[in-house]
Length: 284
Image (cartoon, rainbow, N blue to C red; front, side):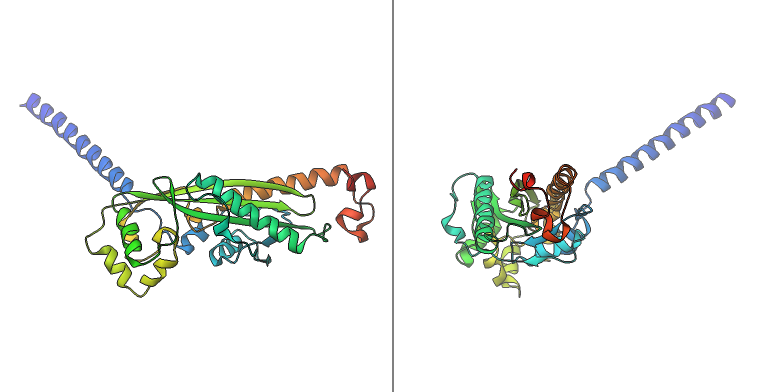
């Protein structure tokens, strides 16, 4: 009887350990299947990278409300906005590489603003930030849908699949004439859509807004949100501005300015950051 009791005890102990292991695996699986963060501007603000200390004055070359909101979330509470008047449709090849396309468009915006506003303001102690973004599906750029039928075809193609946003961030240090260019990408994967989901979205109050969205993609729509299965690359990137990319570029600007200031100390502060330094610094 003692042996039987001991054996039963060992079996019971192994059984309890197995139950604990199953519970742990169940919890781990549930965590893995948990929905991703909401793709909303508030979620993008919450994950925004912080702007480095000593960042120069920022001029945002964009009228995008989401980019301005993300810049504020990075800690930039005071900045100027200027909009480049360029014909984006005439720039680049929509059938080519999306990364090259956004580089060309963002670069054209930056060049236009520099020519219009800073051609005679070489001493302007500011950093110009420009950007562009496209939506891609299976590696090809998707423009805004021409009509509701195309919007419906676009949206239905995302069911059980994924699409991406490809963006570019440019920082141009006006003081030193240096430019940094980076491309960022984010991907959203979706589960299978119910048969009526696309028509329900188009029939909603926000339905017509889909026609103004590249790729007919309005990922923040409340009817679409439950069907998002994963996000790679950052919610802020999807919203139009990779704050980690911008923060890294601004860190480079700050470090380059610090090194320049150490090499060429300011001699006449009242003359500004360029004229106030020795002639050798101005002619570098």
